[in-house]
Length: 247
Image (cartoon, rainbow, N blue to C red; front, side, top):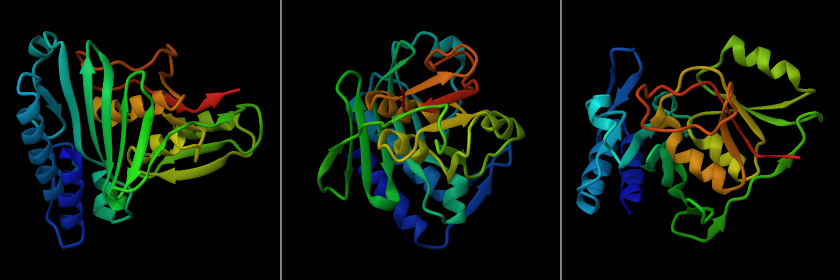
């Protein structure tokens, strides 16, 4: 219900002329980011007042404090603000519950569809649109050596490293997409593979990672091939690969 409320408020702002500010790193910040953050943080505090919240739009918490957390929420109140500003519909809302560096529950809102995806560790992942029928998400199988692997590319964050990485594929089908929609597409067997060779933060990936994993997929550090972990000293993610089931 908290994310559904945020979905609605974000769409109300999306449909009108909205203000855009810019952070110190020149990334955009809209009133939708702030409104969604307020709804989510107030909602989470009301149901779990004892669990701290790490959010993109909150004041950064020092690692000396964060390192003592057993549980924490990791929130991106508007994932894909650049897509929101461009009005291309490819933005999402990410809320994840972290237990000792591992995500154990997550919700991703897709405001444009009034959709909610969710997962609990060990219990599968699901998606529901507009309070309609709920479907279970399941990744497809693919072969890295075959032609026409469906490869996702970030809509607003392309890099030369990514282009070079994709040279290993034979005639891949490139699918541009923004925000955590990419992970939902793999979880729903609409895509196979997403290499992210560039900076992302923990709140960008925490919620969609569990949804992808519970659908049978994986999200691994490009170097170590281990699953991404959370509430690290540095909240910056390593380069990673998100993918369906390799056969």
